Image (cartoon, rainbow, N blue to C red):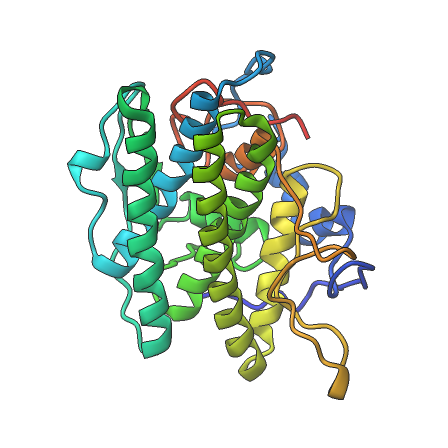
Length: 322
């Protein structure tokens, strides 16, 4: 069961809804303690060298493929009750399995339909990117999608203050948990593709990446809209989305760019926050290192942890020192 983060004192942010300052966030949720002794939530006690070589287009697409493996397996398990088929898992690097999870029992037919659409899209993304890469495609790495007090989802939820010490967050228990877990992953995918765009030089790869970015943005909007609708009925859902957003922000560096789904204004001026944009109506980017900070659930430079206990495959595999 998710516990509401009501004890957190939210502050107003100039760019989006109420959000605590990062230092307050660490203090409120004890994340500084969780990060002590290596400053990592999971598996961050390894020292990794910084990535200095300029990545090739193949490197960038393989980096994205790691994220597609994560998303496609999560949705496949939650919606279809199965992982990706074996013919979409092989390749270079260290192969691994997606472990844990179970099929969600959806009670809202609209959410179920949206979830199925996202699932089929993500599976198609894996097949498409692998096809673009050919024999250069990386294998699926080990992915933690389990439910336990030490699982990646539980550690992320605990850092956001949604559960307490020794408790587990089960993203498959109900629709709200599923939506919050999907929200945790999907927004990162959007900012990852946007951040990777300037690294690509091949026009075919640029076009492919742009197409996937657009679909990931649609997915994010679908999920954020679903959370918004549930939040209008149960306002605590908005606070949970803000807490997850702040947890991501606390991991990926000093900037305060990430946004939850809490609307702004009141009465006739109440405005939803489906599209997390800046004053120019543009969403932000994350570097590959920042994306891995969230995927590994660490603020330090390391090559594994969190959702990827053995690290991702490919040449881009080290998180940033944030």
